[in-house]
Image (cartoon, rainbow, N blue to C red; front, top):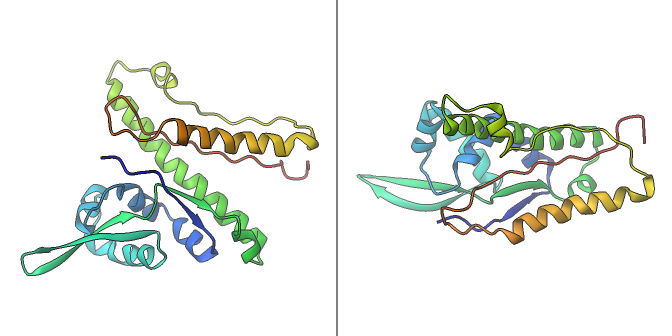
Length: 199
């Protein structure tokens, strides 16, 4: 059964920096349902001992949590899950830090690195689904990818920023996870900003 969508807002730079790590992002992406560390290690193809440190950091920061514990032989096994389905820099984050350049570096890296990991896995999965006869045109019917630079009148910038937020809310609200076979999970990453030196 699909989880309800929940957003975790990151309001401290230390937690944001924890997310700015490809391995930790992959760990979180695999914890859409409760799993033991050993299972995640198998999914990632890395030794389980390499992951305990990262699991501990993520749990201490509240980015993952123990969903359940169970007895396996003489051992107690912990099953972890992601604390949310989405992670975003919180509105209070910029006000809570003094180093604006550090914020810019870590916040954009967290969003864009996470999107890169998701997009690579998603595109590879699509090509596998279409098989040897699949073409980039087939994938283009399912994926919107691109980058654009354009001019916006300054007095309309807030309007377009709000439209982006509204689109995300509409996608989340109009198409809740149904657990049925007729839906597909999609990621939507957006970053709109003034080009340096042009604002």
